[in-house]
Length: 134
Image (cartoon, rainbow, N blue to C red):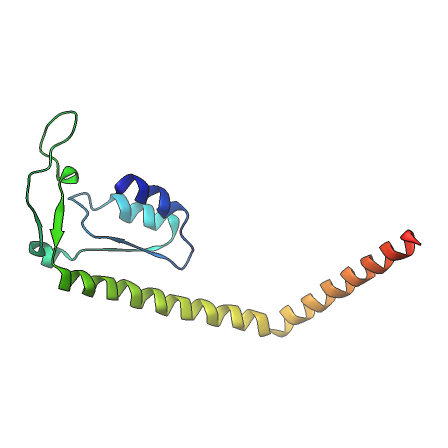
């Protein structure tokens, strides 16, 4: 999932957040990408890491060495829901702020005036085009 997730992260909207369920001991990978993309990063809390378990030891496919990224994990469903709720709460708050900012700009007198000027110019251009066609 990490490869697809890396690509997906690049195309997230500005108000999005990234939730990496388990960073497999590589705390900088997705957090750095999220920071570079400008979105919020969440991961499983370190103090609750005992709620993640693996049935098998992950091994690198080529070298055969032990590697956390190549194991399947089970997470505590209750804690998983709590973490997802935190991410959703963050996104809702961010979207509300975004909507408020858009509304502020949309109703600002300078914005309204600039739109009027644009419409007038557009109407004048259209009228000029119609005269040339006649």
